Length: 357
Image 1: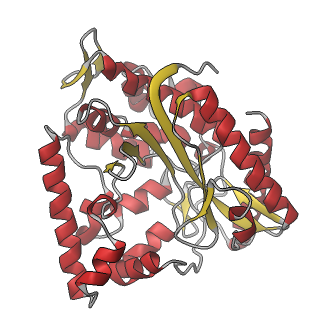
Image 2 (image 1 turned 30 degrees about the horizontal axis):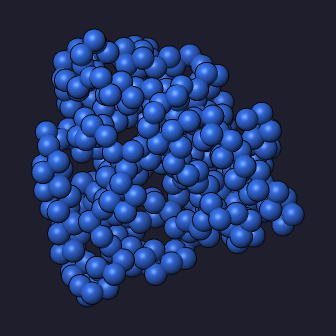
């Protein structure tokens, strides 16, 4: 694949499940210890692999291969595997492993279970043309259909991306503002006002749940109080795009190249709303109402003709992708034995994929 020189630093984070030799979820301490760019996640059977900011996507590829090879080697030494699926396929008991995680369990109640069962990918883009970057990445949300990796959640076939479906649509009205797409922003002031409002809503909810203000502020800051598909990070001054599932690294790198090329078009163009397409002076995106329809179609149905036409208008060819969700077929329901078999199967696929990077 060709990897453009994007002239903008980009970093990647991808979460993978850890399993033992029989396909059961297990903790990944040995894997985290193998490299300084591997970290614990919200629950013990999930670990995150990171790449540092790079303006050369070939360097991102090399960094990702390096950290994944270290993790895979440590996993093999411990008799464990890594699994590139957006969910563990069936429900599992997974307590939070950090003080912040335990606070979120108290705060969200049963709604936190969805986050515990979701593995995704986060891309960090250098802040440049904000809020145009925010709005374009929001409009690129339907690309998640290209890398969806689990149609199963809690043992049932739910959606093309069951991770995105439960994360956005089944957390309840009290939390939807903190998980789902936000409308396009006209200015940074508007975005910051929304973020402040969402933070204060969460603070009020924390008080209702008996969490004192000092504890809340110790673990929750405005920038991490929302888990929306697009958000701003202040500590690392980036726009963070969180739409895709975890999946095979070759698929993630292909998507990274496509999306980064689209975002790089903002160096010479502004974002406008209208008939989607890339014009000489503007990247044109649909109305937010139209986008919401496309996004739901991408989450539920996947690469439909409408999704492929839309992404094609924004310069993304869907034909080179083979989402895992299109290759997993275990009927309408899946039991724990079959889930373990599939985890082992895709752990092997991950090892093969990393070897080709």
